[in-house]
Image 1 (spheres, rainbow, N blue to C red):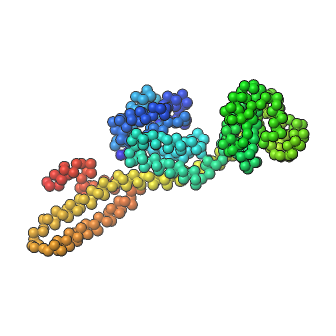
Image 2 (image 1 turned 120 degrees about the vertical axis):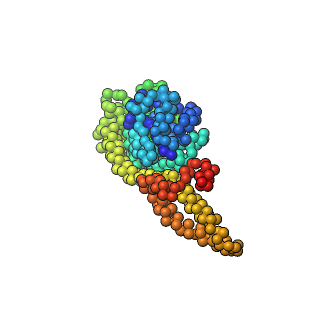
Image 3 (image 1 turned 135 degrees about the vertical axis):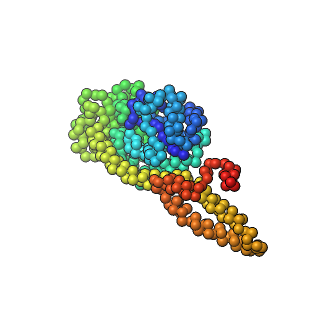
Length: 435
């Protein structure tokens, strides 16, 4: 059996093409049933996210299997073979295993180290299990992929450092205040990045959210999304006396917060620290504000430099992650090869014991009457001889299961000992043995 994968991602296809091949959750079960009903596909799984769609299949023949996967894409999404040749990548065997492990571990993600992809792989696997589209091979493969991804996240720091402006801002707030559970935040403006940062901060336990916008209705709408309090734009400065974090993202052409505003403000705050995140262009907060004691100001360039450093750190950690995955891939390949070699080992054992029993029947009459104990001794002695002969080649075959030529070793044994095809019906094998 061969493990096949055909797919596309942000690396191989533009968004408009990826959209065409997206499988919505509502119809995924039906698509999976169609996949495993394709002739030549024994097991299957579909992973479909905003950045990738990948079809996994187990087939007895790689070439036929890929033809079936292409036919599936054409029937389900009107995605022609020409489209597949242009935008899709194909993996088979060990390459499939390694690719899937890298995907689950986020080493192939647009943002290396992002945690969402592992959850998406788990969901795709669960959906395949629910309709019994997976079998023993994909079941073992996906469990191993999930386990390997957890190892990468646990044994490296690949996901520890933020690589988005919004998350970097939230992390800096955590560093300054340590515990955010009793802190309050003021959002001035309604930029996308500042809203994301607010979400991260709320997730860390920020107690109170205030929202100011030049258009009050927008402030109301934004506050409602975060269970916050809307305030009118001309009142936001009064709230600087009480909040701990201020995110600004207005479209004002000039500074809306100046250094001259702070002497009186910090007296009213009794010098309690205040953290400004200014991600407006042009900037909302006068840069010299950062010179005031207990006032911390980061603009978008400051945050970008944090992100750049963290991206480089993630890249270094990704190298360690790749090394972990190499071992995990080798472990799965050893399991897969041992599974393929098991029928050969069983056939070898059955072949030699079958010869042993025939020879005993052939020469038994020459020995004359034997007691029950003598009969048992002869049976045990002959079985022991065969088992000792079998011991070394079987152990050698098991040890070689992790080597690239393992299946060739199995084929060699089949030829040397004239082993029957394990897929051939037992009655047919017995007829040939009698002849």
